[in-house]
Image 1 (tube, rainbow, N blue to C red):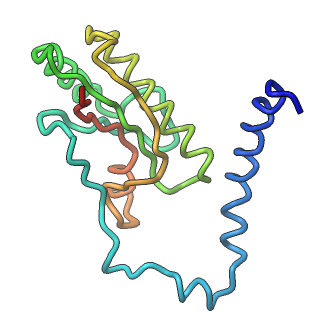
Image 2: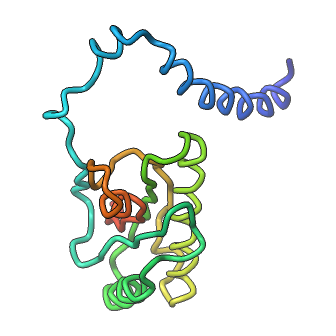
Length: 163
């Protein structure tokens, strides 16, 4: 296999592994699941120490990436960034646990990219946005099964970028 064909096979292999992993995990016996089930007292919500306290998370409606559910928050964040021109940021997109792993990673990436493009449209210099990435359902803000909790997890966070 030549190097160029190996490069085209790798994404297919990763996708195949990612889509088969959930079903493989579900195939374990009930006894195995009880043995390895996390203790609910140890579950913790994500608290990113690099979050910028003056900037609010931008929340998205269920299964969408086109626009934030509260445009005023996005505009206020853009204004703050324009008032603090030395601050560089990373955008981190997230989803609630609905959907499969691959879909959630792609959706969270699109959310982060949407916010990046909106910030640029609102006058934030593109070179101040170090990167925008999606983390899917990893690192939830809330662990309850209520709609309000799930809504909090459908977000893009603003994190200070290191130099």
